Structures are given as structure tokens and as C-alpha cells.
Image (cartoon, rainbow, N blue to C red; front, side, top):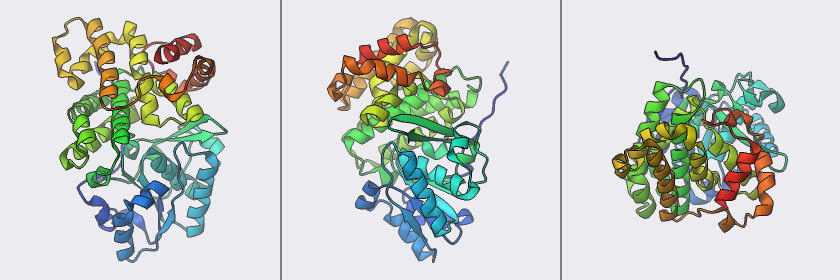
Length: 387
């Protein structure tokens, strides 16, 4: 019998080469006269947002911009962006960039309209709304943030907190593969594995809302990502591979937005918060070690999806052996794509491990979804195995 579940995603999705240059048309129903773009300096320096900006300007719209988003965006930056949106009298927020820009844009749309205090919105289902109309345009194939109801912000020096609410799902997600053509190999690799993590954790999530739709999307995401990530890394101008990676990332985002991620993310967040390691790489570093930890209870689940990503594993009959091989193959893939695979390669030492473990245990909203209960002692062991 199929258990009850709820599935939420973005209201409208546009996937097309060059879609950003048609933004005034594809998002006309929600832009208003004073759209407000949220992006980062890297996007601006590369001119990636220029086609979208030009399209809005040609349509006669008064466009405001906040271009100061940084990785692991701090609360103060969000508040600055909200103030800028209010000053512009924004009628719509357009998030343009990687996961950080999209996460900031979500909160700008919420807080600039509702006036609520961010401290009241932390956690699951606490945001009140309403929000401004919201358009999200990803420039990486990794976070899937354009279809997730989640915004992750750095609070204080290192702690990451999330606002989780269907209110954060955009009115329209615009996927333009051409925007991802210039991604460096390391970013392509890390964000691609990040998307794989989303799919794997969503498929195996212990959440009561783990559902057939999310699992189906997870499998298709892994098929697309596994078949195209090496081409996207080694042949960065391959439009077909880039498009399939972007679609796979979105499917994975849809999956984990409804069947939430777990311990891989919980252990990755302290690496980003303390050592400022990019999120995708943080996930890649701990992924195989968390899978091995979970194998005692989740080997059958991992064995189901392993051949989707690595078809050669279909010949391994024993589920536990296949799951072990799955973890090893993921580690080998990261190395093949040129990513660091050990924490020690990033100057993390045994002395850092206790703090990392303590910080990981603060991610209770994620740890409850892990297939196997994870204690602080377990987190210590996992980090040590990743050194």
C-alpha cells in the first residue's frame, strides 16, 4: 500500500537554450514594472546575466540589482539585499546564479514583502509570507535550488541554518543550459556530484514523505548525471551534456525538496561553515564514508540505484557488496573528475575533527532523515575516515 505523501515543486518550469534572453516574455506574468535581480560579482564579471538584464530593459522595465552575494551568504548580507529590494520598491525578485544567489533571492522575496523577522522563519514551515513574485535562474547544474523550498544561510561565524517553506518555491524556474557552458571543470564536477548526493539521499531518506515521485525523479537524475558528468567536465562547451546535467540537477532538486536529504549534508555543512569549502565539494568529501556507515541498514536501497549511476555494478549480485562497491565507485569518480577526495588535502587535521562532529550534530532537521541513527561518536569516526 502506498503511504500518503505531499509533493510540491515550482509552479512553472521553462527549459530552453537562450531562455534567459527571453526573460521578459517567459516571466511576463509575474515580473511587474520593477524587477530586482539578485546575483554575485562573478556572474556580473562574466556578463552571464547580461542577456536577462537586456531583455528586461528592452521591455521598458525599471530593473534594480543586488550583485554582492557571496558563497555561504551571511545573515547581514541577506538583510542588506532585503533593504535594497525595498528601496527599489521591487515588484518581483529574480535570482540569478548558483545556489547562494538563489537562496538569497528566496529570502529577499519573502522578507521584503512580508516584513517578518528572519528569526521567526527559521526551520520547517515557520515562514508566514506573503512573498514577492519570484523567478529563479540557475547557472550551475548542482543545487537544484530553483525547485526547492529551502534557503540556507550562515548565522554567526560558522553555523548554517535553513528556512524551509513552500513559500520559497518560485513562480517560475528558468533553465538555460547556455548559462552553464563557461563553468570551470572543478565547479562542474563538484556541483554535479552535489546533485548526485541530492538524488541518493532523497531515494534513501527515512523521511515519512519519502514517496514514489521523489524516488522516480532520483533515478532519472542519476541516469542523466552519471551519463553526462565526465563529458561536461572534459568538453565544457558540449551543449547537450550541459543541458542533461541541468535537467538531472533539477530532477534531483525536486526529489530532495520532498524527500529530504540526510547525514551527508549534515556532515558537509560544517566543512563549508568552518573551512569555506564549496558545498558540492564538501558533499563529495564525506559521501562515500556516510554511505559505508549506512550500509548496515541501507545496503538494499543503495544496491537498487547503484547500477543507474554505474551500470557495471549490475553484475554484483550481493546487495551489501554492491552497496560497498557503489561507495567506492563514487570516490573513484570524484578523483577522476579532479576533485580532492581527502579532508587532509584541504588542510583539515585530526585536531579539527571534534569541532566538526559537534557542529554536525546541530543539523537535526537533516539527521532525522538518515537511514541509520548517527551519534556524535559516529560523526567523529566518519570524519576521521575521510581525513
